[in-house]
Image 1 (cartoon, one colour):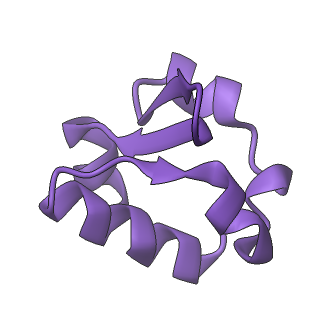
Image 2: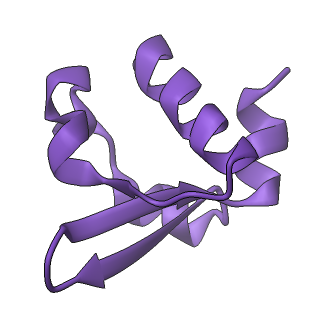
Length: 67
């Protein structure tokens, strides 16, 4: 996963915020297998009517990427 994408997700986790995936396209979020990360308990996904797909790290994901 792109280091910039990881940093954004970590900062969002610190602020307890969801990030719209459409804002992460320039960080190659489309190349990441979100379903696998969700199955592994690393990330949460949610669909929003206004923003589309939203992403948020779980606590497990935060510890996994924030080494």
